[in-house]
Length: 122
Image (tube, rainbow, N blue to C red; front, side, top):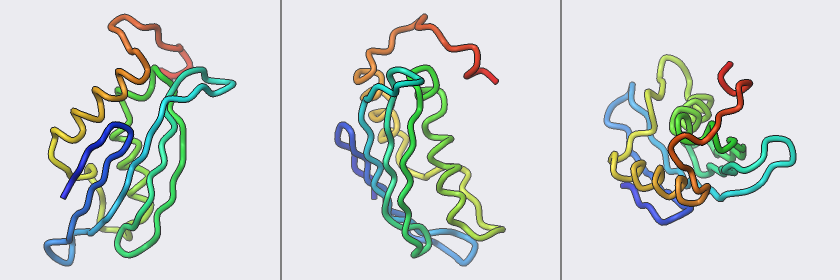
């Protein structure tokens, strides 16, 4: 199950077999200004993965958030799984992440050609 509201995504998944994983996560996000990085999105992912509580908060700068927010969410979720289980990505209907992507673009007023900080390319 997955549900999107601006600033809020809820995703739930039940493992299909022993090598699969279950999760029940809420991802909240809002546009903020960081003293060092400038405008960006503050994320709060909480809930559970494989029955373990999850509470992750982090910030991605405006020029980093759109190309990588889903990858960062998946990497943070990976820390809660015991190998050999691994997240390829947080599974959800693509339309949920499309809506989230568009909402973030609007919140940050992202436009084609916006500058990228060179240090974020490393």
